Image (cartoon, rainbow, N blue to C red; front, top):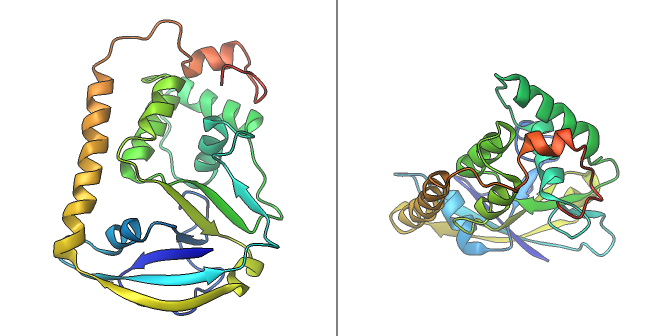
Length: 222
């Protein structure tokens, strides 16, 4: 497998045990199979960056694919709730977090690589609105595809880091890739604003209904 990591500097040897612990899937090394996305992630408004390119043998790796049919969007949200910082202010939000962690928890013990959606600022706000009862489960599933941010891979084990081979870097110019990055985010936010204007969607699964009816991971509605 070939993976790409966008950064403001060249990284020839990713280091195990570093990085922010409050990222989507915890502390790890985040990559993508899409080199164009990596170039967008590498730059900021006035600062160029680099796309670091790697090969990795995953044949003996344990890969958790959160987007597979085995899991639901609530499993993805459960991992976010454990790692990202959510400011909870209402009884519903507190109960939603507890219910999701109690019933849709995924252990990362023994996992080498996590594959799933990337929760940038836009996507994180969608998740927050869902546990607040603002949008339904169906709307969350739709919103998460807005902007086409794609999937990311997070290397989390020593075994995964040991199998990474650096094969070079490409220079990413901010003037070329920052506008692309902002355009993608704009489409995601615009689509979500239009969704927010929709009225209450009778019959859909809001978090309060999921809790009240005690829906579990094997419920076909989710």
